[in-house]
Length: 439
Image (cartoon, rainbow, N blue to C red):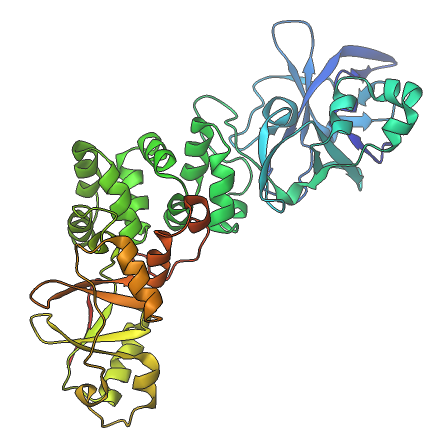
């Protein structure tokens, strides 16, 4: 095989022949190439689809290829076989990828494939890159020679726009009855949620659902939190109740509650019915609050402790529960009825004498907000007192949750900006509400 590298479009339409005794028999022309393991970094081309002009296409395993040159027919050692030749995970390079949207993992954007580059590696053609540039389009349209001849300076200055195959993630269906992400879905999972959300927002509604279905629940939840409410609702409708509920369960409680608040009552109850009772109960309560109030911003993921325990005992218990909660910068001191008595920082606890009681080291003059307080007032309070979180306390002094600084800032920023900010709070499967440091 003399061909060392090239582009798929340059091979499409080539005549295919095979040796039959002493004569060469023409069987048709190349219409496509098949890759059985597209998840490989640079997958080998496993076969050639041949258009015969008849009712059925033919298929030639690549192992039967005798010769591929820069010009001229593709020669086979044996007569090609009839269909069926499809494999469950097969990817058809022309019909599945040409002119299709893909995700450029490194560039964190949605682009369109104009051509595919291959290389000859020890006698096997491997797909090495996707061409998303003008050069690929000219090649596809058969205008490359025209540009080289009549527009040489323009042709020379056309930049190469290739994406290495291991950074490509196609997102289209390859058949109507099989929804899948054709390239290893973990590639998308490695993107920052904000980047992934921006990519999803550029897709059609059908492709948005396809990408979300391909992700694990936690990654999907991360991305969903960064999307606007209209897109969130549309995706949930396309996902189906059970999967949608699994993803919403993984969202931060306050974000999940805001989303549920926007849904109609019937849809909200359908999703809640599919969730774990504890999570559903928490979200059901949070979803009743208006989003622009303190209660609408709060999360129930916080650590509360009793005043008579020692610093040493509290530290020991914190070591046990630390994997179950993300926000332990502040410890909130309450009595058994959850009446807020005081607060102390983790730093204060660490520096305290081991036998010091929590009551002796806590700050009793606590800055708190009321559940019905306006969200902008909450943000101002957090900024004024330079807090990482503020407790939400009702008229009777009962603590119901906390508002973290990231959620407070949200109300002051444009939606596009706030969706890109990191989050303090934890996922439901990692956090139990009102985590108590027991005796």
